[in-house]
Length: 284
Image (cartoon, rainbow, N blue to C red; front, side, top):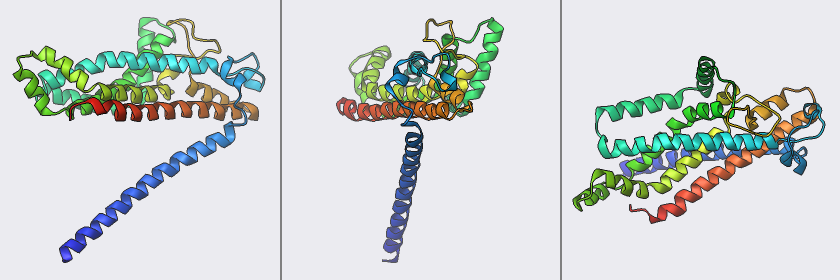
């Protein structure tokens, strides 16, 4: 009886602790949204969302942040797709050809280390590489720097998804006489919902990063017009607007932050929806 009561008390304690942590995380999110919305909703307008900055934008005159919105979408989309081209085949190869090898363990360790490296380090590395190659700040350089940031996130997330695939799927597929290369296609179809979710999470991480693009993508008030031209981004637009002494421009910074937060929220909700609805058709 005492042992059962102790177990019940432990269960109640840890359940209450988990609910408290969940409530704390939700409260932080609500506070962020309330503060950003209260300070930026007044400056948010259709003009701000559909126009590029004018000559006096940073002194409180007309214009908007369309260039930063489009630039962020270009940067995040390019980096996510490039990271997927590199990470997805590597993860599938690990699980099909080298799931228990020492090299796969070392690679996972390397990805974990890369995940923990601050994005400013990737930005500094990208800047050094640009100087070495004689390149200028551009959309292409920003995409490459962001790709380095999101590759470990995408690879490790997809790695965990592939690890959840039933072991019997491999045994049954190979027992039917298929080759390992053909099993790759089966495993890809089985884990496609998880891959899409990982892509969306990586996109949300890329679009909100400022440090990696600070030295590599540059900044411009113009719309993106080429891979080798500088490009604006929402995080840097927020930074530059907050750096001005004009209250009207600072309010626009909070409005820009609200736009960026809404984009990330939509991407996160879409990732949850994708995992829930597309995941119904996979074998468990």
